Image 1 (spheres, rainbow, N blue to C red):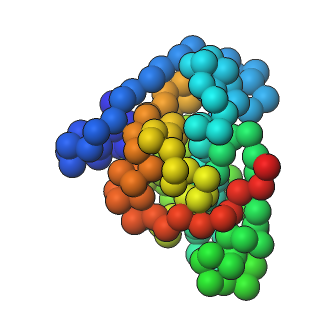
Image 2: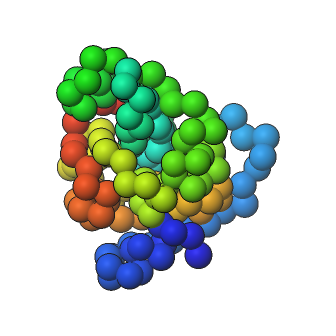
Length: 156
């Protein structure tokens, strides 16, 4: 179990766990998950961390087939500028390794933003806290248990 799955179990949130054999040579962890689980990449989301100009870490959940729009994230967070967070800071703050960072069950609760493309989906997939482990849940459930806001932060 991971902290993300422990959290979902504790709050009795509806979810399903999916695992696959992770290939350490995979170029994109998220696209690998979509491919190995036979999922539409528009339903699979990656968790990225960005830092504001004041050093605040922010969590961005965007589709694996696209990228994070840093200007849009800054606007959604009400800050002047953001850049991708230092990988070691991301790992320290979340308690997860890169490629397995889940938006759920992080060591420190950070402001979280989910790309609005997730809102109409009945289910989305995010990392369950380990490479090769995904959790399927409703976007509203993810937002509720991360305190997230939906915003247009992804780019195709």
